[in-house]
Every structure is written in structure tokens, then in C-alpha cells.
Image (cartoon, rainbow, N blue to C red; front, side, top):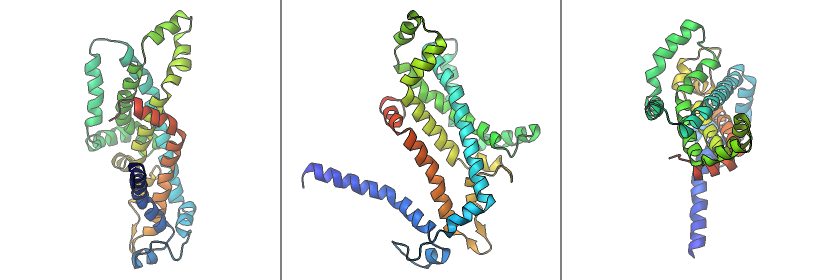
Length: 269
């Protein structure tokens, strides 16, 4: 076997290894609890869609999915809206305390979410924002905005400043240059940033669980409450797990080209 064939088989084996947990999750989602705990089955002998029907028919589940998507979209939008101009400022201008301010942004990302639970809880309870998707989205911004600024600043700094000067000499306004020239050049950076913001907010549990009650309960919280008097409902839990993977796949599909370019050129480690 030559090196090319060996590398191909290694790659195929690695892909199968990565897909095995997803396949096993899906196989559990189309079986009932008796089959799941009854014995090992590589291929389900009695597949069923009852677990998915339970999620789509139970308002607790589909409302939780709606709550999660709502605050994730809000968080991603706000993070990009704030981080893009901030990263451009850090990459193009030098001012007093700029490096210290940039480092302070990163220190917010270094702190564990548990540190901010009590302040957020008391603040949101006082202003009536508790148990809303907006509360969770704004709390996540404390972590996603610094990460977004750090990623985007690395990309923006790689764009020569001569491009700004050329646009100005050509008579373009700053708004035209920024929206029609600069941002399209950095599509890869925005794709990478969008990916990280979405993934962090989608899978984060601690803040989402503490800052939500019965109305804005996200799916990650509902998945931790599938224990009943009869035990854990493994089939429904697996079906919910399959459905929670789908939004991430959709995001990666739409930003896949920019994502690859961003990881190749950006400063993401």
C-alpha cells in the first residue's frame, strides 16, 4: 500500500470515528427506551419516530427550541454589531490605553461564567428582564463580544492601511468604503466570528439556566430535566440531541467557504 492510499484510509477512519457518536445518537433517537436499555444493537431492529413526534407535539420542547434560537440570534447579531467597529478601531488607530483596553476585553473572556451569575440575576430581576431571551443574549455578549473583537482585530490588521487611503483618494465616503469594500474583503473573518458566537451561545448552559425561568427556558435546560419518576427518557433526550445538532450544521454549511478561509488566514488558535 503506497502512502497515498494509506493517508486516504487514515482520513476515512478518522471521519468514521467522528461520525460514530452522531450515528449512535441518531440510532437512540429512533428507538424506544426498552430497546435502548435492552441490549446492544448496531442497527435498530424496531425504528420509530415517536421520540421526534413527542418533541414536535410537546409545547415545552418546541418553545424551548424557539427560545434558544431567539437568544442565540440576538447574541450573534449584537456581538457582530459591536465587535466589527471596535475591531476596526483597534486595528487602525492608536490612542492612550488602547492595548490596556484590548487586554481588559480579553480578561472578561477569561473569567468563568459562574462569577457573573449573581450580579446578572440581581440586575435582571431589578429591571424586569429576568426570564427573557434578551437577558440570556446580553449575558452571553459579555463573553462573545471580547472574543469577536479579538478574532476580527487580527483579520482587520492584516488588511493594508493603504486600502483605506486609496478609497479616500478615489472620493469614496467612509461608509461606502467600510460597507462595500472593507467588510466584503473580510467575509472570512465575519464567518469565523459568527461561527464562534453561535456555538458558544447555543451550547452554554450555566447562564441560560440561571437567567431563565418557565417562559424563556432554552432547550439545553429542558434536556437536563428529562428525569421522571420512571427514570430518564433516553429516546426523547437523544431526539432532542439530534435536533440541537442541526442548527450548528446549518450555520457551518452557510459559512463553510468563509470559515475555511478564515481559519487559514486568521488568528484563531
